[in-house]
Length: 296
Image (cartoon, rainbow, N blue to C red):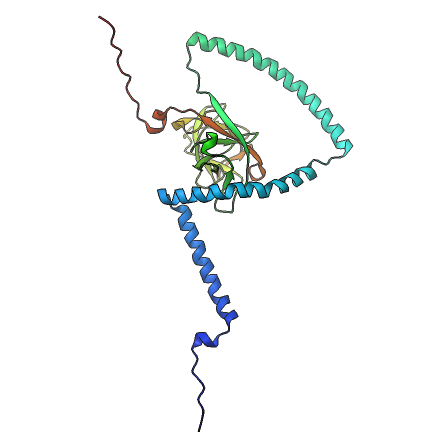
């Protein structure tokens, strides 16, 4: 009498390691696609979820990164006596030049104030700022953003400009109670109204997901050259005017290319600029002034 072996399915006959090897990539791909869809979704519930997660993660990342930054600062601060002496001489010469510029600036400031009073010029809104550390790197190849451990409790608002010591690096796109996400100027989705400082030519500065930027929507008759400085125009009221961003490094078939003033990839400390902007500049709706009724 012949004995029959029990029939096994294909899945049961495969080793567990083989099944895991085949299924794991599919699960990871599905998870990655789901995260990308959630990140790109701009609905209010999804944005609130992202902000809640960011608020929870920001303090942890800040605590973890602090010892490593302290160690990095210690290594970078080690210099030989020869380097320190050369740097001291250079700083003394630079200090003398800056003193001359300071004296000239005081004179022009007094002249400017006198002319403003004479012409009855309305002054720009006062700017306030908060200084903080960056607690996450600029992201990968497709998303250029950083995380800051400040939020609504520090008077940070959506749309605020974010600067390093040398120039604009981005603007706040999401803000929670204790954290804020900054879209960098190098991101592909970044569009900033700017002007060429010496010619006052208006344009849009676009990110390319690289270390360089590009000027778009330039006037046909614009004549630009390498070395010209690019600053914010303040159009639309989103960003304060005259914040430096970069300089033109190439004018050619590829367009007008701009190099940011700040080293965005290695920035550690930033300032979040809070400008009190008239809401009419953002919405385009201007409320008519109420007529004043005098006494008869």
